[in-house]
Length: 255
Length: 108
Image (cartoon, rainbow over all chains, first blue to last red; front, side, top):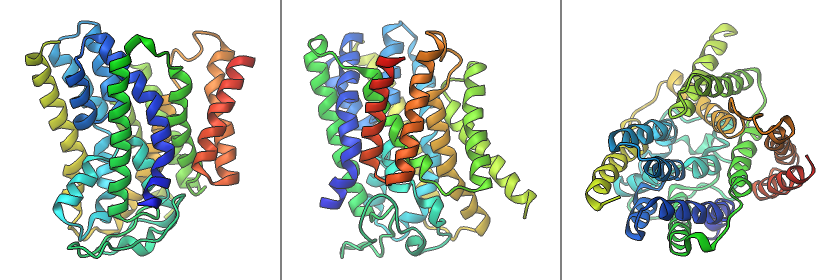
């Protein structure tokens, strides 16, 4: 539990100001406190919640709101595929709860170092997935799960605990923001950059190689191109898929 | 927003995000992955982080408020990257990034 908290702390500290800002925006856009609570505790997506509040305040039709948020949320499928090998042998409920609470930031923390250690392709990727910024070794919890491979130094039980800590921090911050409303003033650009810094950190910690450089450059360029042509919603997933495709081609080109 | 409209939107986006978050993991978790699939999945973290960073830092309107203002997050990101490579601490990186961003926003 202590290692889970230590790992989750940077995300929690970032979630508090952004969660407050999100709650303030949701409240200002006309969402009730109950709606804010449901969104933050169940939907649990900062990007999606900011988008919902902004689009609703702008009078956007419900169908357009849904399609925009679905497009923005599609990147989660990439993270889900990436964590799959680490859920081998983990009980269904725990695997569901863990995968359902992975966000951009928690993915960054728990799985950021996977590429540097290689992904498992079978039932026991733990041996190839040790390391990362989080301290500790992969463990089993002694429960009913057959095995709990480690990701970024945490096992799935610890990862789930950390995810839930982040979820609680996000939800409480949202609700407090919605309650206090305009009484609070949050420097959103500054607090948002704390989250950006997490992504920059995880990117910088990836092993430097020609393939990684190709993947990173094409992904970044893909996002920018999407934005230039107006595809803001799916920009992240389209850019990342373009980067992965470029990486596969680059690997094929030099064997 | 009334509860009726909210329930429709909420139900759709929750179903979608749960599907995105869980279906690939459950579809792949009990399978023996080929080496090619493993390699493919191994590229995702770099691609995802680069895409997330790009999404946060780059946009067609990034220099609308002036070149200096547009450079603030990029220069702060460079500071974060240097701290990340040197100290390997996520907390140090986040802290350095926020401090650098605040200072650069004041100076530039």
